[in-house]
Image (cartoon, rainbow, N blue to C red; front, side, top):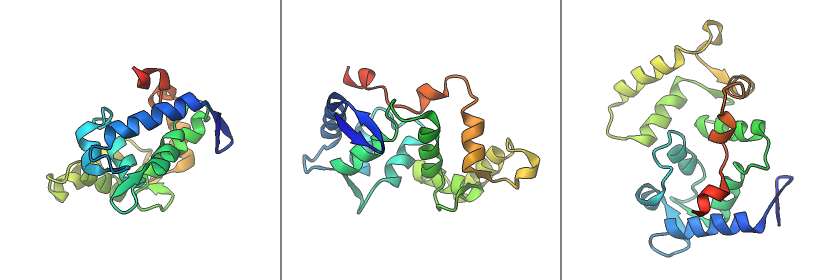
Length: 167
C-alpha cells in the first residue's frame, strides 16, 4: 500500500502506473517527453489529457515520480471534488484561480499548434457563451466543481480505472 495525499493506494495500482510509464518511455531513459506521450498514450484524444501532461512536465520531460503523483490525483480513492479540483487546476493555465477565455486559448494551442490564434480565440468565445451571464466569462474553481459534479457519469470521467488500465 502507498499513501498519497491522505488516500491509501494499493501497491498493485502503483505497479500498473509503472507499467504504463514504461510503455510511454519510448527511449528507455526513465523519462517521458511530450513526443513520447503523443505517440503512445491511448488517452491523448481526451481534451484535457495533453494539457494535463503538459502541466506536470519539468524540463520538457516527466520522471516516474512526477507521473505517479499526477495520476494518483485521479485515483478512485480520491473524492470526486478533489479530482474535479485537479482538472480545474490543469485547465487554469495561468494559475489565477479562474478559467477564462485566455486559459481556453492556451489550452487549445497546446492541443493543436497548427490552428491560427484568431480561430482559437473565436472557439474560446463560443465555449464561454455557456457560462451564466453574470459570470463575466470566467469560472471559479468552486463553480466549476459544483457545475460538473451534477453531471451524470462525471465520476467515471475523472478517475483512472486501474482494472481497465491493466488489460
